[in-house]
Amino acid sequence: MPTMVDVARSAGVSVATVSHVLNDTRPVLPGTRQAVLDAVEELGYTPNTLARSLVTSRTRSIGLAVSAISNPYFTEILQGVEASALEHGYGLLIADPHDDPEHERKVVQLLHERRVDGMIVAPSAEPGDLVAYLGRHRVPAVFLDRVVEVPEGDGAPRFDQVCAEGAEPTALLVGHLAGLGHRRIGLVAGRPGLSTTRERITGYRHGLAAAGLPFDDRLLVHGDSEADGGERATAALLSRAVPPTALVTANNAMTIGALRALRDRGLSVPGDLALCCFDDFAWADLFTPRLTAVAQPSRELGARAVRLLLERLTAPDRPARTVRLPCALVHRTSCGCPEQTGQAHVTAPERTLP
Image 1: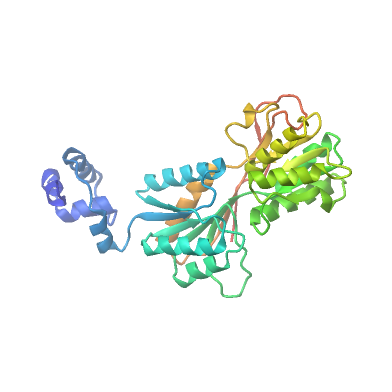
Image 2: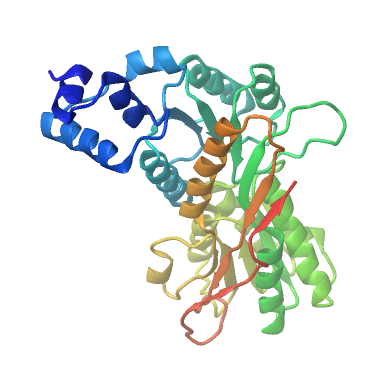
């Protein structure tokens, strides 16, 4: 097996220069750098990651703790994280916290014990123990998709965060349905306590108010961000004495559940109930009718989380920031409109908040 000494000899440079090229620890002239890379390729040299980590105190690995990895939305986020990490020379260790606060803290501790350089976490609805652990051990971390609100001035640690806009796109869906003449618009909201759930409920209420419609708490039900929960929640709405004529579902899994509930009752979309959903997914345009949906920039969310984490590793003391990315409306036919093509951005441009 070739060694770093063999690479140095083949490239005509010192072992130290080879180390600087492979570890990015010091600038190297472009010609010299290319000679080292050519020698690495020709000899088939593989760096000893374990030995390098003992010298640099870095493992060049990132821990990713995300629940519901089987969900297409989080799968695309994972693809964005993986591609960006690989581009920057980092590997991934992945764990599923199952949206359970106690399990969340355990898997984060396990990732930390494996000496990852930093973590990307989609926090649960009760992230207190998670925040305390990361802060106590000074673990560089980025919160993904769901934001954690920490009161100002309490001394608690703050972390970089990246998420999509939630309130404004939901308000747009409600406003669109109201513009089609609907006056009883239901919402199947996600798991209570999650920031995404709070924001989409806020958008729902804002959309009703902007359309001059009253808020009726009987038209807001929680589907717990899962298909089965979405099915139960939709069934509850349909059992109301005066059911809604239109429905907004707050994530893709609950959309599937809502469609099951409608099918079981022999109801059609949009004939009996107009439907708009938060989260676009690959087969949304294969349904009949095709689903009108808000598309989140899932891969970009994952890639941006990696870049924020690497910036934190480079500058540990810089102020924390929250990055919000815009969504897009994918206008199809489940809302009751004729077929349309193209996407329209529905939120303000990307925002970075202190």
